[in-house]
Amino acid sequence: MTRSGKSPARRRYLARLAIFVTVYMASLVAAVTLIRQHHVTGAPAWALALVPGLAVVGYFWTIGMYIVEQRDEFVRMLMVRQTLIATGFALSVASVWGFLEQFALVGHVEAYWIVVVWSFGLLLGLLSNRLTHGAWGECL
Picture: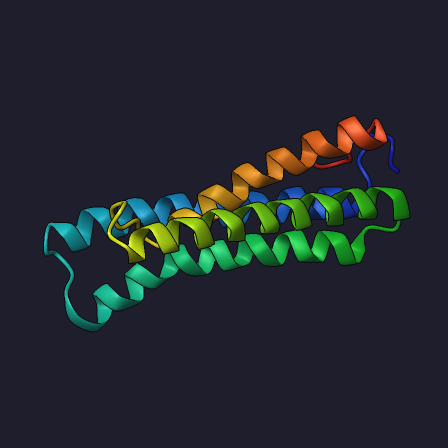
């Protein structure tokens, strides 16, 4: 820990997260505006449409690097539990919704929404950590 109360792993996590969230938001606004208004087409549209998705990949990489770089084993375990809970929750929702969709009982949902569900699962994991281990971890 440093004087700021943040471990070096957390500082790097927050810096990386800020970068990828900024790229995500800016590229999503640009893609929606430029592609939907037909200002960009063809290969440039494909490239622009890929950037928000790649920023989400960077978000996942950021979480993985935090786990790898975290030296405090308890804090690392909390983050691993949190991501496992989020992953199980997201995959469960995707599986159930997929079968409901298969049988035309619900409408189609764009695949990127699973990341939103996964992110909500991170909150569930955070709450589970607090209830079962009495700690939020560092990433709150």
